Image (cartoon, rainbow, N blue to C red; front, side, top):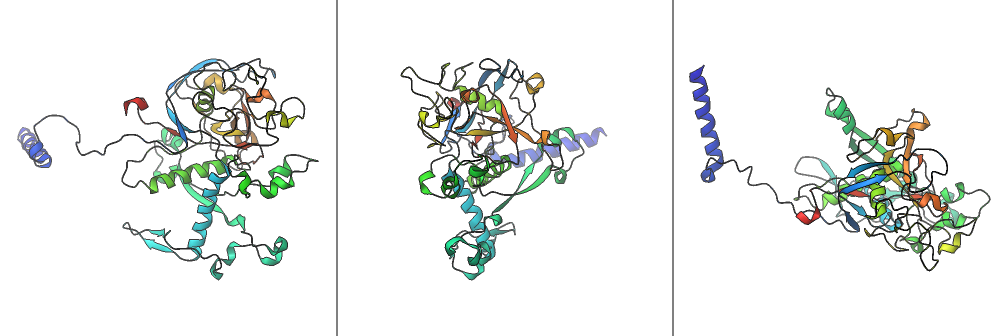
Length: 410
């Protein structure tokens, strides 16, 4: 046995020496040919540094719900979109899905070095090609015979890993952890009619997502699952154009505590993103897009939604963290969440199944919207909506976890 150990040690030393080449000097230096990492700077995002946050009600708990208990949590640094995702940004996603369907119908594929079929995006699409007819509504069913896409075909399929199950089920295989999701991603334009009875909003239904007048307005009519699909596609888009760089974290929705931390703009306990205790500035001007008074929607400068860059940003450079549209977060809603969440980067996740009770399908919504009273604009106010619903007053923005201690270290 001793002789075997000696032989093994000599063999191992020989392998190490041969593998390290002439630079081997017996020192522990780590692997020296690792790729460099200088961080990233995503377009349209701002950096939110790590820090602590006192969560809880920003003002009186007017509903006596006691769902916002005061406590301190710590949040790692991340990037966040400086505005809500706009119609034109979301349209890029819709067009990508549209074009991928067209390329599939036209059989525009190539085989990559791994032997997998991939869409060849270099092919030009001629939309009059008869092979693309299934993508359009039949002429006899259109209004004024205008050519229109059959948006019911605009489905996006993606895969995601159930990390919660991986942490708790040690016997789970990769097949158990990877989930396949398929969802129609075209915005629900009928929300403008459905959300308001006895109200003439048909012009918004016809134009809000399609007309260039609204390109820079926040996208609405997007469910929580549609926002998740967009986030996955955005990651796919980012990685496809940087194949030789180490992958960063995925784009995703913010947790409700990341959202609150970013909304405060570095002003702890601030009830509104601008730091003051009032909805107006010293000149009496309203600071966000909401419902002031009773039915006087236009007083703040916007009757419905407004341009995503309207009003002043908070101290982190984030626009409309209060008002305009409320925003989906990653977190599942639980009335008693503040009583049991961890104080280190807290979050609550739950993958609700179709046959789950409705209460399990609630996701946290933050920020208030153009149709809400001022209470919902407060940074500490919690609200929720069902994950599979679409509304004319809920949009979203993405975040990206920062890898490292501080951006100043890069």
